[in-house]
Image (cartoon, rainbow, N blue to C red; front, side, top):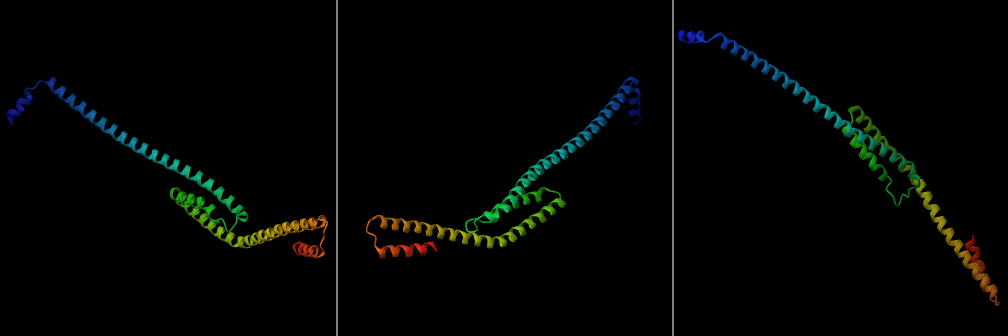
Length: 192
């Protein structure tokens, strides 16, 4: 041990000052690097959080716009329900886009908004069913009108045919009382 201490004492002060300066410089660089690394980690974490927020905002914006568009379509569909033919159209088809957009909105929205969207969807579902029950008499009336209109058109074409036959019988020069009475009877029936 005394040899080691003697060895250390034999080293000139200039070398010791160089070693101490090097150790101080190295420790300063290490501290600086650790600080820079910590700052870089914080910056990367912040950037990651900001990009996640931006992606979420972009996704929400797209879903909100799509939902607003489907909301307008659903309202237009509900307004047009009385004009639809109940036998040919599924009344709920016009609402499918709205219900799927509302489901997507519930996935990306805040919890309070998702709850409100769920309530709105259920209200629209109930409204659709209520409207369907009110549309049954409207559909029956439309069917009755269609049947009456078809029968009227058919009767009118038959009246026109009978009148043409009557004119033909009169213009033939050989009017037959029996033929004319049969045509007149047919005319009165179709006219009524």
